[in-house]
Image (cartoon, rainbow, N blue to C red; front, side, top):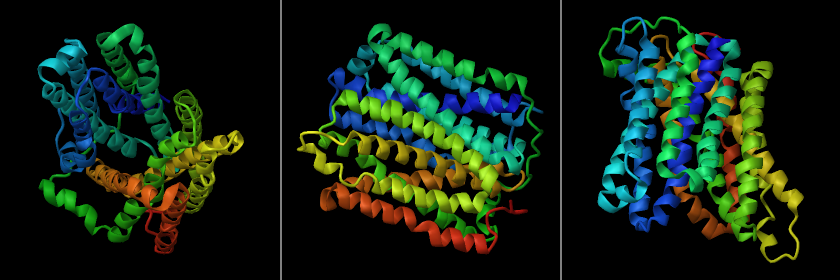
Length: 405
């Protein structure tokens, strides 16, 4: 039981910085009168999440404390991130923006590097300590914990920001990050045995696994429809005449709860129904969820909105997104080699992140050219594209390195 509490706390911690700095920071900086071009630089501070595969093999080879391989990395990275938060809290936000805006951006880049490295070690610890039959549940907890951290920081802390201000908000964020690691002190992970070979051959060994090319292609396209379609949901709802307050309720509360439930439900269904059925079924559900947004665009001029349609679309889409992510992350664990869990899982997750970044970047061009309805129809087609590839991988028994579940 201790390992479930430990993993829940660690994944919640990972969502906190993204929720606060990714969602709230652009608004806070704009309120300080910062130029939009500088605000745009905030996207750079997330780069470590897409590049973490580069240094992940080091976490398989080296430890910071003998006998505490994974835990030493997790605790060192997490508490170092807390120190960075305290440094940011040392000065009011107005001082940071007026004197040297690039310094807080540098600190945010360091913060993301530390948390991304903590994520590498946490994922590796999860792969090593959770048996394959329970990995579905573990990944449901992973996605749910991360989403909870995001909403706590991006919703809860921001709602208090007007009362407590910049410094107290960061102190509270740092306190939650410390509290999130406390369960790990009561869980002793299995010992990790380092693979004694040069780093690059260790990292490149993933590409020599059975059906590695087809598997990497699946990682590129499995969440493509979701990553391509969802960035246009907020603009769609806004253009349909939905106010900011209503958007907050729809996406911040209803959507969050649906995604949270979807992650837990998806993890449970993976355990009950198996990898193959859920990977295929969740693709179909995602395509239907994206199609559910058709017709909302025309409500902008309508005297009354079809709120049932809008709520069902948001609920089903967030539900499907959480379920699909939990299923894919489960199979990613299965594809990790023994002694190389950090390198292999980080590589796979970075493929998904980079694919999603590219898909999200071009989504606006699609919506502009095709309109919202055309955009979501194309997104649904992209969501269905991986079905044939999943079926091929099933036929070739390529999901697990050692055995099928």
